[in-house]
Image (cartoon, rainbow, N blue to C red; front, side, top):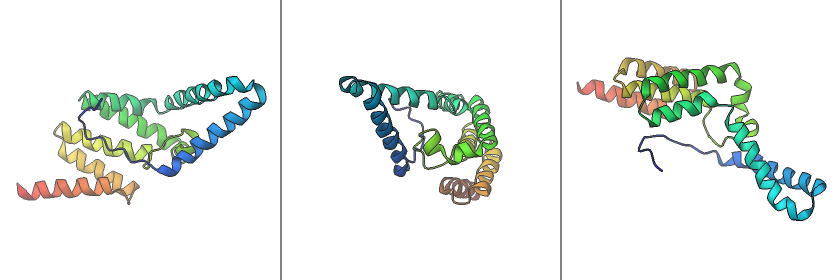
Length: 161
């Protein structure tokens, strides 16, 4: 079901390698400890449970996305800020998100949080704060094309008025 919101999901295809390795390791493990006929069911079930558990780690980010989709932008900003703070305190977790969280996102949770905070500010009419967060994103992630494009858009709009 599409939310109609402009959420960009950039996938790093290389991130699927840890997923395949995990599935292979689970298969080898279950081949050693269970009868072959149950391995077919045990591996996907175990993999699914691991993924569900790992998806609970970035809780604030997931809450923020739900609020964003519900157009509750002010509340989403708070949750995105919580997500940003969480991952700034645990930069190692964000850096190795492919392995530790089985995340397939090309950009980090900290960059996503800053971009989404900025976008939420545009939705509630706080253009100056949006610009500030896009600039903060660029200062921390100089290669962020989304932040650079958003700043160009803001600049072009301010030039028209």
